[in-house]
Image (cartoon, rainbow, N blue to C red; front, side, top):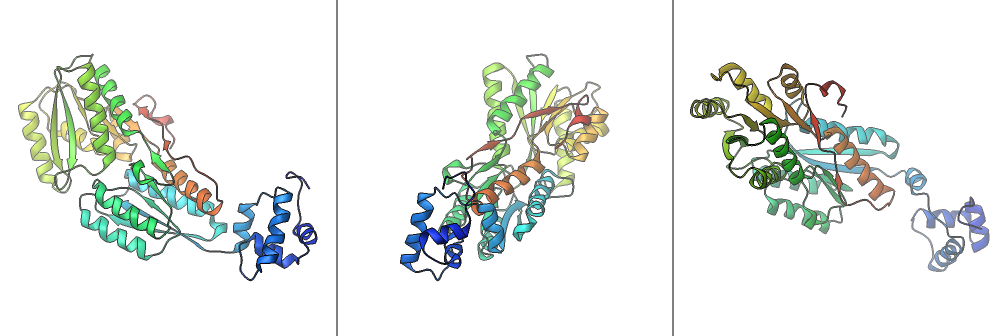
Amino acid sequence: MGSTQKVRIKDIAEKAGVSVGTVDRVLHGRTNVSKISMEKVQKVLNEINYVPNHYASALASNKQYVFAAILPLHEKDSYWEFVEHGLRDGMKRYSDFKISLDIFYYDPFNDDTFKSESQKLIASEPNVAIVAPIMNCNIVTSLANRLKEKNIPYAFLDSNLPELDPVTFYGQNSIKSGEFSARIMLMAAGGHPKKMSIFKIMGEGRVASRQQYDREIGFKNYMKEHCPECIIDEVQLYAYDKDGFNTILREYFKENPDVPCGVAFNSSIHKIAEFLSSERESKNHMQLLGYDATAANIECIKNGSVDFLVAQHPFKQGLNCFRSLFNSYILHTKQQKEHYVAIELLTKENIDFYMD
């Protein structure tokens, strides 16, 4: 029998000299098979170059699978909401396999919430885990070690820590993304601006994710190489202090009324645009670049208060990460270690044609 020929369980049983039920138990990894019978069946499988149909086997096994994810707390219409929609869509697409999805949420500016939610995730005893890393790498490492101890495969979303050896990663190459943003802003400013602003949304003295941190590194590296004379102001804005947020912006623009360009490495650029539209005294337009095609950011692109958005397909990230773990854990297929999503530039002219 060749490997391309359809092989029936009955044929394997006859050739091995065992019952059909024994072959079925061997193929599906069930118990109550003697060592001798196991060896007979395996010998025949090797002879015919048998390739198991893991998809059919998984369906036939009637097992229930638990996928778990740990994500930042998020508001409606945020980047992370689209990621979550992608994960839940993955669960629906593979509903025949009886997959449930448990999601645990942490405050990206509070390490203790990541620790406590990680403990809940481990206690839920999932089959696989999807992790959106917090900024503190040591805490993520602790979770990864616990998952390895429990033999729970895991993938990273948005921010990658390849040294922790996840099954796979989905997200942008954040260093390259930062370099790309710097190039766009240099072009927008005419090549040699004297000053640019980076608007950093902070909490507990840091940005929310490794992704944002690395984008800033890429941006500054590019500027240092291509426009070293440009002064880059870092405007630190605090996520949970709306009044203070506006006060800091008011003071900054009072001292720097004509900064030509500004960047935010997360989805909050609309907040800067809204402030400038209502309170900035300078008549000169400030070129703004931000990330993510949220409803608020799209509105700002359309009304001209934001000039550029870098899109990163959050829905597809969530869906494809779910699919990759499904393929790895349930179908036993090897997965590519890193999946970098496209770095796409959105403007007023093409925003209506962007599809996540």
